[in-house]
Length: 183
Ligand code: C5P
Ligand code: MG
Image (tube, rainbow, N blue to C red):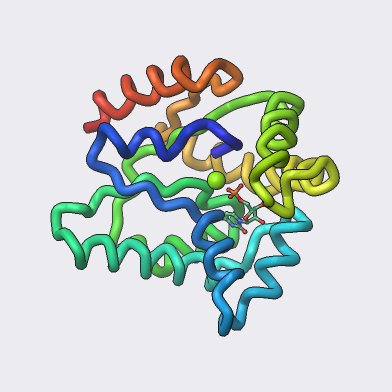
């Protein structure tokens, strides 16, 4: 859920397809004839969450396309979603009948460590939100809007919390244990 914790690694060993909501939004932003490009751009810079109609459409398309290429690929690790109430509502409306949410991986890490990792990433990422100003805003969005969603999943007993302040290898070792158990 939080930054830079190696979500993509999981997929190399397990049969999950990694889909990142942020990556899909950045891709859509750079598509020439995108109607949502400008809105996505300003949300990303401001650390705000893009209206779910846009994000769920991109996620659903990516899931459908993956399953079309290989019918065995029906397991997804969705990275960075749902980030707020609107995201969760949109998921429920569009996906509740179609997909089960088995569990949530919560990569827990203090704000300063997160910010420093993203500032480090910003040296080469070219991302418009890897700067202190945007990162502070993203932390606020996390506290106000994402944290309550994690709490909802916690009440359903679906959350695995991982201490993501450690090294990538240590974090991934924990992720592996969870994926081995969850299947
Ligand atoms: O997860 P990532 O760091 O790639 O997210 C970058 C930005 O993309 C977020 O700060 C937000 O502006 C946007 N985003 C969103 N809705 C999501 C995930 C990401 O609006 N579910
Ligand atoms: Mg991400």
